[in-house]
Image (cartoon, rainbow, N blue to C red; front, top):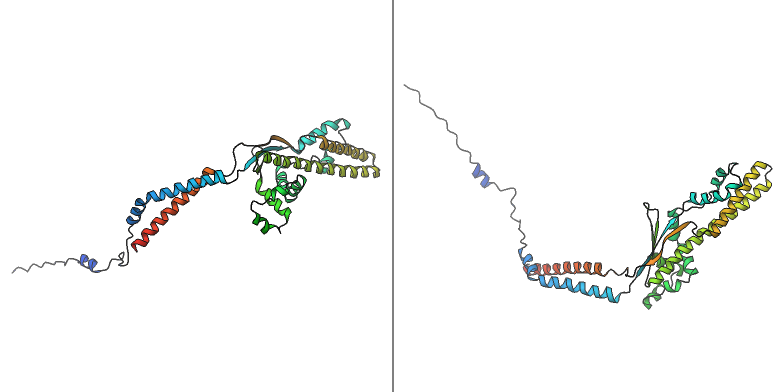
Length: 310
């Protein structure tokens, strides 16, 4: 008798049923899809309004900035500091025949002859409070700088220190920058009149040179007095000779500071103002206002569409 043939069959997995019964992990009943079509259609339907607002804002801004607002002109000048070795070389060339020995160069270097012509020092002076206030007082600029454009402004700020008011006014109008690449200093000054801008910037150049000249003369005079006193009291004949040679160098330094036309720096480009106004920037202001008007109008249209669909 043959053994019965056994067949083992596997029940198919009902994964599909379990997956269908199990909730999908990525599905949430409270998820909502935001339909942007109504807002896009709203912008499309009102695009003429948005564009008209931007164009109108640009035109009004151009008219106001071009006709109503005052025009400002900017004068520019370029100066180049003279390095101390150049000044010392000119002095040494004059007094070289007096006797070059006795350690003259070493002692002169200790005195710091030639002044400090560093460009950063000039910029610090030009932007300083004392220099600007002295310039305004010397050339009687306070009345022009503190003149209010609207009388209530004068009532509100009349208690302020007038010197600080003058300094802030000059600080807004004056600017300078130093170029490491070229070694030049560019000076700028803004005024409502081209000739006035050039004239006041010329005051900056002249007063800076006068200040540096006066400082150099004062330092040389103090050095002469000190060296002469030391030379009269020293018993060493060699040292006395060296001191009198240094006195001669300081005298030459003082005389050169008094008569040198290009002392401390050279004026490469004298103050000059362009015939085109520096401010206001009509094109830039118009473009910016038009952009913000376009953006505001678009937001307003979208906001109305949102309120309508809620």
